[in-house]
Image (cartoon, rainbow, N blue to C red):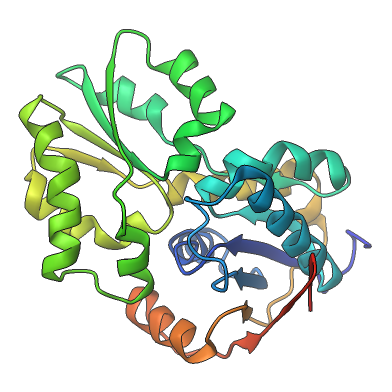
Length: 274
Protein backbone atom coordinates (compact mmCIF):
# COMPACT_ATOMS: atom_id res chain seq x y z
CA UNK A 1 0.00 0.00 0.00
CA UNK A 2 1.23 3.48 -0.82
CA UNK A 3 1.05 5.50 2.39
CA UNK A 4 1.45 8.66 0.30
CA UNK A 5 -1.81 8.10 -1.54
CA UNK A 6 -4.09 11.15 -1.40
CA UNK A 7 -7.01 8.71 -1.18
CA UNK A 8 -5.85 6.96 1.97
CA UNK A 9 -8.18 6.52 4.93
CA UNK A 10 -8.07 6.07 8.68
CA UNK A 11 -9.12 2.47 9.28
CA UNK A 12 -11.08 1.62 12.44
CA UNK A 13 -12.40 -1.75 13.54
CA UNK A 14 -14.28 -3.33 16.42
CA UNK A 15 -16.25 -6.49 17.08
CA UNK A 16 -19.42 -4.42 16.67
CA UNK A 17 -20.74 -0.92 17.20
CA UNK A 18 -18.68 -0.10 20.29
CA UNK A 19 -15.93 1.38 18.16
CA UNK A 20 -18.37 4.03 17.00
CA UNK A 21 -17.57 5.81 20.27
CA UNK A 22 -13.98 6.08 19.06
CA UNK A 23 -15.05 6.94 15.52
CA UNK A 24 -17.11 9.87 16.83
CA UNK A 25 -14.15 11.20 18.79
CA UNK A 26 -11.86 10.85 15.78
CA UNK A 27 -14.36 12.72 13.60
CA UNK A 28 -14.29 15.54 16.15
CA UNK A 29 -10.48 15.57 16.25
CA UNK A 30 -9.95 15.03 12.49
CA UNK A 31 -13.05 16.36 10.71
CA UNK A 32 -11.46 16.13 7.26
CA UNK A 33 -10.27 12.55 7.53
CA UNK A 34 -11.81 9.83 5.42
CA UNK A 35 -12.66 6.82 7.56
CA UNK A 36 -13.23 3.13 6.91
CA UNK A 37 -15.04 1.37 9.74
CA UNK A 38 -15.44 -2.40 10.06
CA UNK A 39 -17.86 -3.94 12.56
CA UNK A 40 -17.31 -7.68 12.84
CA UNK A 41 -20.84 -8.26 14.10
CA UNK A 42 -20.83 -11.87 12.97
CA UNK A 43 -18.42 -12.57 15.83
CA UNK A 44 -19.53 -10.04 18.46
CA UNK A 45 -18.68 -10.06 21.32
CA UNK A 46 -14.95 -10.70 21.17
CA UNK A 47 -14.58 -10.52 24.94
CA UNK A 48 -15.60 -14.11 25.62
CA UNK A 49 -13.64 -15.65 22.72
CA UNK A 50 -10.18 -17.28 22.84
CA UNK A 51 -7.37 -14.80 22.33
CA UNK A 52 -5.97 -16.70 19.34
CA UNK A 53 -9.32 -16.48 17.57
CA UNK A 54 -9.52 -12.73 18.18
CA UNK A 55 -6.00 -12.41 16.73
CA UNK A 56 -7.11 -14.23 13.58
CA UNK A 57 -10.11 -11.94 13.19
CA UNK A 58 -7.95 -8.86 13.75
CA UNK A 59 -5.38 -9.88 11.13
CA UNK A 60 -8.12 -10.63 8.59
CA UNK A 61 -9.81 -7.28 9.17
CA UNK A 62 -6.48 -5.46 8.93
CA UNK A 63 -5.80 -7.05 5.54
CA UNK A 64 -9.23 -5.84 4.41
CA UNK A 65 -8.68 -2.29 5.68
CA UNK A 66 -5.28 -2.00 4.01
CA UNK A 67 -6.67 -3.33 0.73
CA UNK A 68 -9.30 -0.61 0.90
CA UNK A 69 -6.88 2.25 1.47
CA UNK A 70 -6.25 2.53 5.21
CA UNK A 71 -2.92 4.18 6.01
CA UNK A 72 -3.34 4.06 9.78
CA UNK A 73 -5.43 1.58 11.75
CA UNK A 74 -7.19 2.23 15.02
CA UNK A 75 -7.99 -0.98 16.91
CA UNK A 76 -11.13 0.44 18.53
CA UNK A 77 -11.67 -2.63 20.68
CA UNK A 78 -10.02 -3.29 24.03
CA UNK A 79 -10.22 -7.06 23.57
CA UNK A 80 -8.64 -6.97 20.12
CA UNK A 81 -5.95 -4.60 21.38
CA UNK A 82 -5.16 -6.96 24.25
CA UNK A 83 -5.15 -10.02 22.02
CA UNK A 84 -3.66 -8.79 18.77
CA UNK A 85 -1.99 -5.38 18.85
CA UNK A 86 1.53 -6.76 19.28
CA UNK A 87 1.05 -9.29 16.47
CA UNK A 88 -0.53 -6.69 14.17
CA UNK A 89 2.48 -4.41 14.53
CA UNK A 90 4.81 -7.31 13.76
CA UNK A 91 2.74 -8.55 10.80
CA UNK A 92 2.21 -5.10 9.25
CA UNK A 93 5.41 -3.18 10.15
CA UNK A 94 4.77 -0.34 7.68
CA UNK A 95 1.34 0.48 9.11
CA UNK A 96 1.00 2.61 12.26
CA UNK A 97 -1.51 1.25 14.76
CA UNK A 98 -3.37 2.93 17.61
CA UNK A 99 -4.80 0.59 20.22
CA UNK A 100 -6.94 0.74 23.32
CA UNK A 101 -5.84 0.23 26.89
CA UNK A 102 -7.90 0.74 30.06
CA UNK A 103 -7.35 4.29 31.33
CA UNK A 104 -5.95 3.17 34.68
CA UNK A 105 -3.22 5.83 34.67
CA UNK A 106 -5.55 8.88 34.74
CA UNK A 107 -7.85 7.05 37.15
CA UNK A 108 -4.96 6.44 39.56
CA UNK A 109 -3.89 10.08 39.24
CA UNK A 110 -7.38 11.48 39.81
CA UNK A 111 -8.81 9.21 42.51
CA UNK A 112 -9.26 10.76 45.94
CA UNK A 113 -10.36 7.61 47.74
CA UNK A 114 -7.58 5.47 46.28
CA UNK A 115 -10.15 2.98 44.97
CA UNK A 116 -11.10 2.76 41.30
CA UNK A 117 -13.34 0.41 39.35
CA UNK A 118 -12.64 -1.03 35.91
CA UNK A 119 -15.37 -2.39 33.65
CA UNK A 120 -14.03 -4.57 30.84
CA UNK A 121 -14.37 -7.93 29.12
CA UNK A 122 -12.78 -11.16 30.42
CA UNK A 123 -10.25 -11.17 27.57
CA UNK A 124 -9.13 -7.63 28.38
CA UNK A 125 -8.56 -8.50 32.03
CA UNK A 126 -6.62 -11.63 31.05
CA UNK A 127 -4.32 -9.86 28.59
CA UNK A 128 -0.71 -8.86 29.11
CA UNK A 129 -1.55 -5.26 28.21
CA UNK A 130 -3.92 -4.85 31.16
CA UNK A 131 -1.46 -6.51 33.53
CA UNK A 132 1.24 -4.12 32.35
CA UNK A 133 -0.99 -1.09 32.86
CA UNK A 134 -1.84 -2.18 36.40
CA UNK A 135 1.81 -2.83 37.22
CA UNK A 136 2.99 0.52 35.84
CA UNK A 137 0.28 2.86 37.02
CA UNK A 138 -1.79 1.38 39.85
CA UNK A 139 0.80 1.26 42.61
CA UNK A 140 -0.86 2.23 45.87
CA UNK A 141 -4.34 2.15 44.32
CA UNK A 142 -7.00 -0.50 44.88
CA UNK A 143 -8.46 -1.61 41.54
CA UNK A 144 -11.82 -3.40 41.51
CA UNK A 145 -12.88 -5.26 38.35
CA UNK A 146 -16.10 -6.47 36.74
CA UNK A 147 -16.81 -8.04 33.36
CA UNK A 148 -20.45 -6.88 33.05
CA UNK A 149 -21.73 -10.09 31.39
CA UNK A 150 -24.29 -9.34 28.69
CA UNK A 151 -23.69 -5.58 28.52
CA UNK A 152 -22.08 -5.61 25.06
CA UNK A 153 -25.08 -7.51 23.70
CA UNK A 154 -27.49 -4.98 25.18
CA UNK A 155 -25.62 -2.10 23.57
CA UNK A 156 -25.44 -3.91 20.22
CA UNK A 157 -29.25 -4.10 20.35
CA UNK A 158 -29.50 -0.43 21.22
CA UNK A 159 -30.94 -1.17 24.67
CA UNK A 160 -29.08 1.56 26.52
CA UNK A 161 -31.51 2.17 29.38
CA UNK A 162 -33.69 -0.88 29.89
CA UNK A 163 -34.30 -2.86 33.09
CA UNK A 164 -31.90 -5.57 31.91
CA UNK A 165 -29.13 -3.10 31.12
CA UNK A 166 -29.64 -1.36 34.45
CA UNK A 167 -29.49 -4.67 36.31
CA UNK A 168 -26.19 -5.60 34.63
CA UNK A 169 -24.65 -2.29 35.61
CA UNK A 170 -26.06 -2.32 39.14
CA UNK A 171 -24.63 -5.80 39.67
CA UNK A 172 -21.24 -4.45 38.66
CA UNK A 173 -21.27 -1.02 40.24
CA UNK A 174 -23.12 -1.25 43.55
CA UNK A 175 -20.56 -3.58 45.22
CA UNK A 176 -17.78 -1.28 43.97
CA UNK A 177 -19.55 1.83 45.25
CA UNK A 178 -20.01 0.18 48.64
CA UNK A 179 -16.24 -0.32 48.77
CA UNK A 180 -15.57 3.35 48.05
CA UNK A 181 -14.71 3.77 44.37
CA UNK A 182 -14.75 7.37 43.16
CA UNK A 183 -13.53 6.70 39.60
CA UNK A 184 -14.79 4.28 36.95
CA UNK A 185 -12.64 3.22 34.00
CA UNK A 186 -14.48 2.07 30.88
CA UNK A 187 -12.35 -0.74 29.45
CA UNK A 188 -14.62 -1.57 26.51
CA UNK A 189 -15.48 0.77 23.65
CA UNK A 190 -19.15 -0.20 23.88
CA UNK A 191 -19.47 1.09 27.42
CA UNK A 192 -19.33 4.87 26.80
CA UNK A 193 -22.79 4.60 25.28
CA UNK A 194 -24.23 3.80 28.72
CA UNK A 195 -22.41 6.58 30.59
CA UNK A 196 -25.73 8.33 31.40
CA UNK A 197 -27.00 5.15 33.07
CA UNK A 198 -23.69 4.60 34.85
CA UNK A 199 -23.90 8.16 36.23
CA UNK A 200 -27.49 7.59 37.36
CA UNK A 201 -26.38 4.55 39.35
CA UNK A 202 -23.09 5.89 40.67
CA UNK A 203 -23.99 9.55 41.20
CA UNK A 204 -22.26 12.66 39.94
CA UNK A 205 -19.58 12.45 42.61
CA UNK A 206 -18.04 9.48 40.81
CA UNK A 207 -15.86 10.27 37.79
CA UNK A 208 -16.33 8.14 34.65
CA UNK A 209 -13.36 8.00 32.26
CA UNK A 210 -14.21 7.62 28.57
CA UNK A 211 -10.99 6.76 26.69
CA UNK A 212 -12.25 7.77 23.23
CA UNK A 213 -11.07 11.43 23.20
CA UNK A 214 -7.57 10.38 24.28
CA UNK A 215 -7.47 7.75 21.52
CA UNK A 216 -8.51 10.39 18.97
CA UNK A 217 -5.70 12.68 20.13
CA UNK A 218 -3.24 9.80 19.91
CA UNK A 219 -4.43 9.09 16.36
CA UNK A 220 -3.60 12.68 15.42
CA UNK A 221 -0.17 12.41 17.06
CA UNK A 222 0.62 9.17 15.22
CA UNK A 223 -0.40 10.70 11.91
CA UNK A 224 1.82 13.70 12.60
CA UNK A 225 4.80 11.65 13.78
CA UNK A 226 4.61 9.50 10.64
CA UNK A 227 4.41 12.60 8.41
CA UNK A 228 1.05 11.42 7.12
CA UNK A 229 -0.43 14.91 7.38
CA UNK A 230 1.88 16.05 4.59
CA UNK A 231 -0.60 14.56 2.12
CA UNK A 232 -4.16 15.60 1.53
CA UNK A 233 -6.46 13.43 3.62
CA UNK A 234 -9.47 11.99 1.89
CA UNK A 235 -12.56 14.14 2.47
CA UNK A 236 -15.08 11.72 1.01
CA UNK A 237 -16.61 10.93 4.37
CA UNK A 238 -16.89 7.44 5.71
CA UNK A 239 -17.16 3.90 4.42
CA UNK A 240 -18.70 1.36 6.75
CA UNK A 241 -18.80 -2.42 6.58
CA UNK A 242 -20.35 -5.07 8.78
CA UNK A 243 -20.10 -8.83 8.77
CA UNK A 244 -23.54 -8.93 10.41
CA UNK A 245 -26.85 -7.31 9.55
CA UNK A 246 -26.55 -4.05 7.64
CA UNK A 247 -29.94 -2.87 8.90
CA UNK A 248 -28.98 -3.60 12.50
CA UNK A 249 -25.71 -1.74 12.09
CA UNK A 250 -27.37 1.31 10.53
CA UNK A 251 -30.02 1.40 13.25
CA UNK A 252 -27.32 1.28 15.93
CA UNK A 253 -25.27 3.96 14.17
CA UNK A 254 -28.24 6.34 14.08
CA UNK A 255 -29.12 5.64 17.70
CA UNK A 256 -25.59 5.84 19.09
CA UNK A 257 -23.93 8.71 17.22
CA UNK A 258 -26.65 10.11 14.97
CA UNK A 259 -26.68 10.94 11.30
CA UNK A 260 -27.40 8.88 8.24
CA UNK A 261 -24.89 6.79 6.35
CA UNK A 262 -24.48 3.80 4.10
CA UNK A 263 -22.97 0.46 5.02
CA UNK A 264 -22.02 -2.62 3.05
CA UNK A 265 -22.07 -6.28 3.93
CA UNK A 266 -18.80 -8.20 4.12
CA UNK A 267 -18.39 -11.93 4.61
CA UNK A 268 -15.72 -14.18 6.07
CA UNK A 269 -14.20 -16.82 3.79
CA UNK A 270 -11.90 -18.78 6.02
CA UNK A 271 -9.60 -16.17 7.54
CA UNK A 272 -10.27 -13.59 4.84
CA UNK A 273 -12.84 -10.79 4.88
CA UNK A 274 -14.38 -9.99 1.51
